[in-house]
Image (cartoon, rainbow, N blue to C red):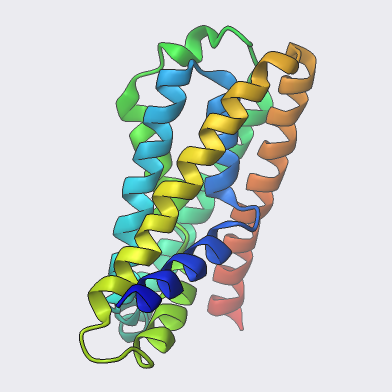
Length: 205
């Protein structure tokens, strides 16, 4: 079943590589925190991402197709919270020493990682459709090695991204980091705006 595992691993890496809210969250955290906190944050993102991947594989996205009101709630709540996170990044002055971010309650980081991972219904729906299509092509007994490969990609990708970003932070000054925060904030706000736009289009046609 090694080929099936590798298929899941390669698909997972391809799915995670494009820039998105999770990648921005991990990069920003790695540049703004100590190595230990950056790695802990990436592991939290890995946990939420794996839970999302497994849920998609099992077809949870079908719930939102079955209950349109749930999809609307997710779009509205997700859009507002994502924009809130983006605004927070824009307003935050970065510090290479980590500053108050290092002492930020870890529960808040866990919640923020949940928001950027789970409160994106498009990712849930797209993930379900994509993984569902691959699941239909798997041989008997291939479900477990495939999803293990897919989730292993999350562990490898986010931890590597956090480590590399944290090591590079020594070469980045505070001004550059602050503007990177703002750029990440703008991109994240665009994600949130798109969610609200999708909600408006769903409601008003």
